[in-house]
Image 1 (cartoon, helix red, strand yellow):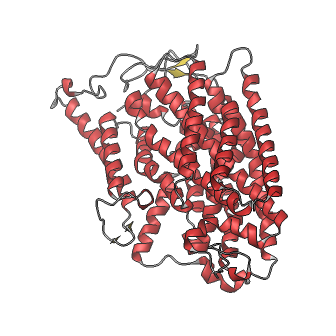
Image 2 (cartoon, one colour):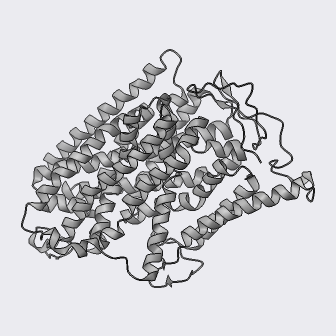
Image 3 (cartoon, helix red, strand yellow):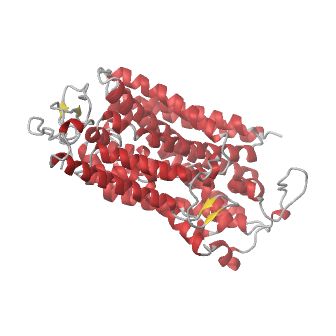
Length: 562
């Protein structure tokens, strides 16, 4: 039976978040009053996000429903040592601050894809959009799925309806307010997450169905296992750490910061915040692991039959089950609000990030270079609806939250991380190397298969488990390294062949080594920088066509060159 009191409570919560989102979105109109909306204002909040708000919105973005439910699920299934995601993503925020935050903010980019299109050309750079888009959709789907599972358990409402309604709310205020709406709702949502989860933990402990947690420390700490399990553990940790960096949802906050030093600070502090916010769901997982569920009203199969443990196919609902059966009803509503806030704080960010990349890098810089500001914003808002719809469909078709969490970073880790590292730090990389590295990384990753999407493994690497289809060999890291190596090797080889005259210039079909066009490339000015436009000229162009800005001021960004 539907819990109508709980439904009313969650509706009120949604209305409050919606009101804050619409109110914050009005800052965009006030900031550009009289001259119309600007893409930088909508996508990056006019680069006016302070360090404190930036820290809150960065932390809230990572601490989504998948973060909460996935952490509790991992603690329940394998113990603390197998709960890798919180530590991995926290380290990725810190490394992102060290390697990329200051450098990207100083360059004044609008999205993460800008350096690729500046150096390799808008069409080739546009290829990087596809793994970035898939990553954002998978991430949004994971957190919407987490909310659907929670609402269906606590309120007894249909999961499909709850996921669709939640997605509609997040899409609506993101559609109307852009990054301002996302950032300010994140602040409120982070407080709701923190307070809601910590209220539920003592309530769950103050009942006689759970044993003393300190008596069975070794059990909930867990162990990794033999050599092949350790190999898989290392592969997954590296994926989370380095695959957690090249996300537009991260760089959108970095690039919206007022200063480059502020961009670094919010990365470092948000990393600490992610660890702190993992403590409550980790404790919930430990509580569930030490509970005899036969003493509760929980019936896994709905026929009155009880089980001492949560069945394997229902461990993705550890958090809502603890709320529902180990806490008073009013406490479970507070916990439900925390999970709902976590989902919205991440879903809106991912949807806006993917839409921003499409509108700016694909539509504006590739398809219609002369598009007006108004047209780009219309395209972005239409993209918000499309991306939100795709994420909702994924949320309703894939079940494993923690598995989907890993899948989010797969393509980003194998393809985007080596590409981002080289485009920012290796001056001799070129389009030939980028394309080869992209292709090699993609093929090697797909050859390893993906059980979640029912992709069979074409290559059975060492330690392959035929029964489960698990690749224990760290083939994802191997694919990333191979992609990195190919990009460097092919770039240096083509540079040598063309520069030495071994290959005729007519074979430089991508016009990126010797047949470099004589145009200049321009991007809209970041007004926070005082740049002498007359002295910054491009040393070489890697694009097929000149990029034409809409801004009356133009900054000529120097190309990374050999």
